[in-house]
Image (cartoon, rainbow, N blue to C red):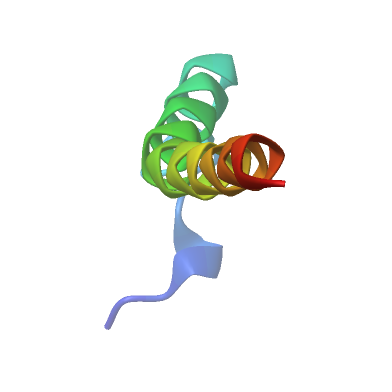
Length: 54
């Protein structure tokens, strides 16, 4: 039967390193950046239109 306590320390342990952290940060930016840029762009467009009209 599988029992993780019976395993040797070097066997089956997958620990994240800095490369995994960088990949996670890049994935988060790739997901969050486009909607954020669209929101900022829409806000700037509204402000410019209000400036031109008034």
